[in-house]
Amino acid sequence: MSQLSLLQQMAKILLPSIYLEDFEATSIKEQPEEWLIVLTEKPERAPAALQGNDVALDGYCTTVDVLPHAFSLKKIYRRFRRGRWKERASTVHHQNPYNLHLAGAKITPTLGAFLKEAFG
Image (tube, rainbow, N blue to C red; front, side, top):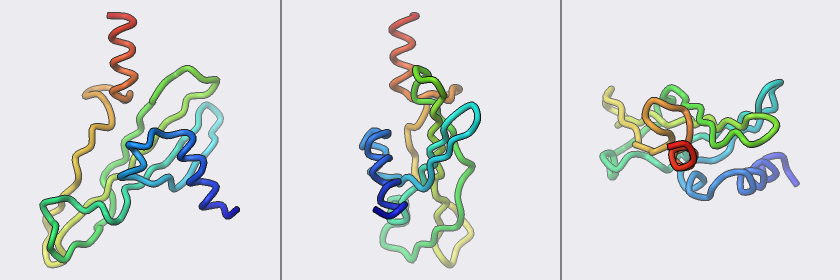
């Protein structure tokens, strides 16, 4: 099994399928205090506003690190790399909106809902 297919299999085990519709796991790194799963927006996910145009991926937006839960021995962060898209003849950038974390917090909406229910 190649390293890429192993990475994709691990992603299917560790991540909700909803994330894998728009992102693909590009690395999983163990660090001293945490695990980091890097998810990169798929190249075919250009924003709807650019559909039908000659589109180019022009780098990536600032990454977003999100903590899905804190119930394991090491924290597991998901680092999302969202594409920065533009028409080839333009300098105006576009990006897709995703509901990756709660506003003002770097936790998933699911974890936020759990904490709100558990602690009010």
